Length: 224
Image 1 (tube, rainbow, N blue to C red):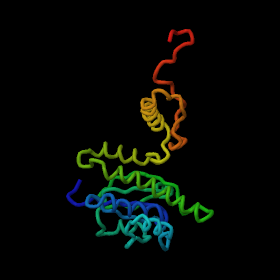
Image 2 (cartoon, rainbow, N blue to C red):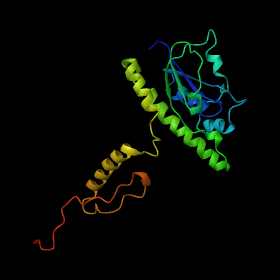
Image 3 (spheres, rainbow, N blue to C red):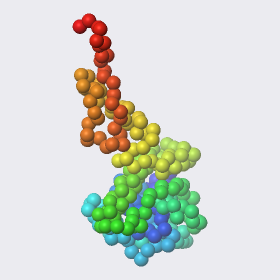
């Protein structure tokens, strides 16, 4: 697209959690190819403390992360944007400013961890789940062959990333394919006991039904 790193802006309403995490992630995994930013339509006064603590524990730099208005990126003289991604449904439904650079856009909705009420453990779990979803999507995005895709194909890829299931909890057709491939391999490795149950180490969502033995069973009347 350009000889410079692509500028990527992540938007949510408060710019205190999800978009902040996304900014840190793309600056880590897209270093040299992408430059990440974040903003909000109604920014909070500060970044959520759990978001900062989580990033620090994951060894991500947090210096310079702050909650700010998206007006900063629409002001005269602002850096041209190449991509703008909304990570909350509220921001996706709002009228955005005019962005310099005519960026490509997509919605990558993630549940708001800052809205979770409960124990500290429950809040940390919510933030870690948001981190995992964004991490999965951003890694996919940074691996795209952007220079070789036209805008139509690239837009299709960006929209598809927003529908990517959490990699730890695969669903739908992805589960069926994952289940069959690994179960076939499991049966082939255990020809004499393929009727056994699925290894306990696999998550319940990916456990298939008992498979048939790989060798035909002899009937009682068959000669031995």
